[in-house]
Image (cartoon, rainbow, N blue to C red; front, side, top):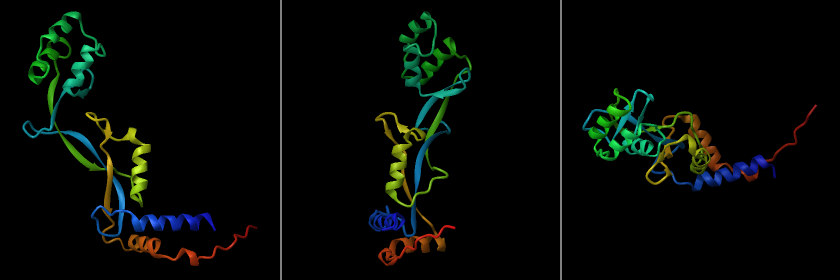
Length: 186
């Protein structure tokens, strides 16, 4: 049997047996991921400390660890003072940073937002899951438990008659009745 017909038969079986995650047909799969975005104080899911000197924001515990581990170099006096600073208090830690490392540092309030990853479209959920597994380094992780946060996201091709027709053909066509002609090359 032609390998393309075999592929279509296997795809049909997968399409007809995969979950739809509550979405109406015709459905396809995308990816959902997460990002941290600035927000107003009181609406945050976390705080970070922005260091203009480095040009990036850091989670306070990770920043503290980097100072302690010597990843970010400061004087012995600064390290000694850091040990007596309440690093779990963002304001106290920020005061230490301003005194010993970057006097323009400030607190950033952030919230976690989900977003649909652009330029990703899969016909099957399994293919989307495999993509995340093989490309995990492009997506966010839950640093507390070191797992991917990105996940499959079922979407409906709403009012897309050609997509609906194509998926219906793929899901209902009798592939056993297809005869493949030998190609003629000149």
